[in-house]
Image (cartoon, rainbow, N blue to C red; front, side, top):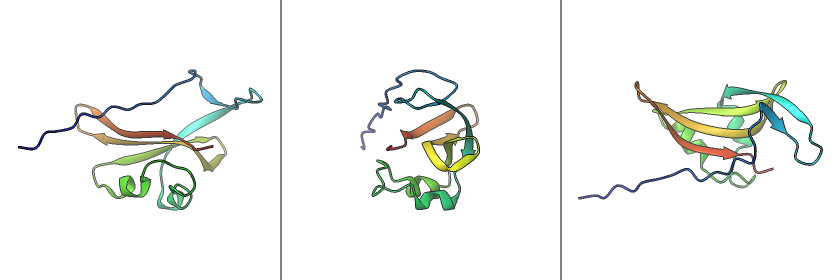
Length: 100
């Protein structure tokens, strides 16, 4: 009998805002959530500092990937999330902020 391992998402939320905020200057930038496209995965790699294998998540047929981007600058990914829609609830598989 296989024992299922329970997972938890261990993230720190430093503050809740309606935007991305530059921690040095304090400048705020309005954001949007967009579906990840295959072209986005060229810069979302472990060698560029991302912790998770987002290419594998993208290929999973039961998952949707979304990115957080500054409005007008969708090519710079600020964060990623992987979700599944199970009809009566959504399951959050992974969440990660950009390595920068």
